[in-house]
Length: 412
Ligand SMILES: [Mn+2]
Image: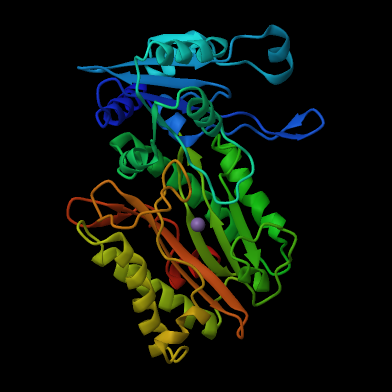
């Protein structure tokens, strides 16, 4: 993304604040795994959305003024010896170029900078990026900042940035859609490689190797997540072992993505490992396909997001009923195990809480129809990424084979 994207995001965020209010966003810290090893650093997506700088221990501080706002980015200072081991840190000029922020300082100055503002009573309200999961043990940088302010500056009001950030991130800019389209092309290539090389006896890790090879050739070194399973392993929704082996007649399930310029795709396909759908596989697959097709014809601005999931469930039930699989809507949970729609963007499950939102042009979410028939040993999902347009919607992943004929065609 160009720096103008991040600049516009900061402006849109600050437009929601009142003069004098301060906003602080932390990139986060690397988490220690064991001994002197650390988990790979993954910056806060809100921080990235506002800066484009993927660097640990960095902080964005913005303050609203009567007109406009100030912005200052604190980054890790250069450290010759550490960089020799860990790789280059983003330097001040590069951070400025990436983010479009003019004022860049080093992180060691951050604490005194904030205290100076608070001591001088120049800010009576602070917005922090607080995103706590219930039962979470690790404290984030925002949690620690909140504790400090509550203790040392009890008169200062603390608010959470998350509602504002969700409101911004839910609508994708043109450059975000372009990045997603690029990511979709690579996703399709990766899934095609798995389909074309599929054969009975193939291990899940071999499917994964096909997928990862295509991504690496395209400069995508790590998929955001990868689920590939065969046969009965398809009955674990977030399966991640890759050690299973396909047997003749098994379905392969994939639920994979690509991250390009921070934008994620989330696409699932199911196919018979031997390249030919059995009657039962075809029967169930076509229920999911008709449901998905119905959704892409029907989705348009103004529809409540909650209805998307409910409609997928209801319509898919009707298909399964006609197929003689399920007699009563009460029993649909036997075959449909998960929700059918979630937003995608900088995160795979971009905005978990989308209650009360109406479909609006620029939104991107999954249309995910999963059918799990344990008795028949058939489980798969058909998941596509839907972009809401001015008068309808567009299936961003339509080029990944979807119909029985298309899938059998590429596997011949
Ligand atoms: Mn998915």
